[in-house]
Image 1 (cartoon, rainbow, N blue to C red):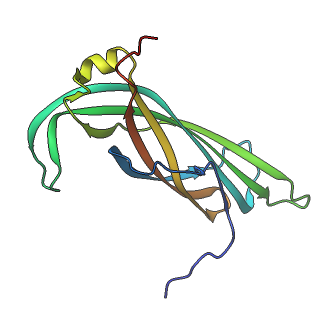
Image 2: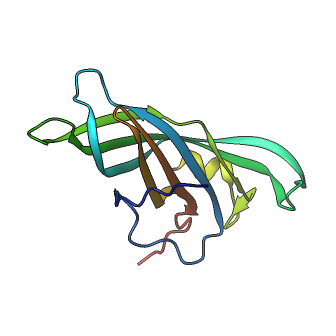
Image 3: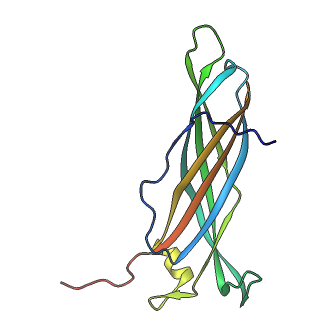
Length: 173
C-alpha cells in the first residue's frame, strides 16, 4: 500500500507565466536529496522549498545533422547551458519553541542541451552567441518537496529552458 504525504509544502519561485509558443527549448526535472546542515536543529515540519535558477554560461557545440531516436531533427548545433540553482528550505524546528529555520543550498547543475538552428535571420549561430543575441531563460514549472526524516528533504524541480534570439537588424531613423 502506498502512503501519500498530504502535508502542504509551499513552492516559492514558480514562474507566474511560461512562454506561449516556445520554439527552441528543453524541459528537465531535477530530483535531489537535501540534508539539513549539522549546525541546524532537526525538522518537525517542512514549510517551503524556494528555488532560483540562474544561467552561468552558454556555448555552442557541433552535432551531426540527423534524425534523433526521439524523432527530433538535429541541425548540426546544440547550445550547452550551465545553470546555478540557488535553493532554500524553510522548516519548523523539532524543539519546544518550534521556531522557523532555513537552510540554503547552491550548486552548479549538469549541462542542459537545446537543439537550435544553424542560422537565425541570416546570421550564423556562433555569431549570434558572440554578439550576445542569444537569450536563455529558465522557467520553474513546478517545485515538490517532502520531508523524509528529521534531517532529510526530497525535492524535485521541473524547469523549462527557453532559447530566443534578439533582433539581428537595426532600424535607421
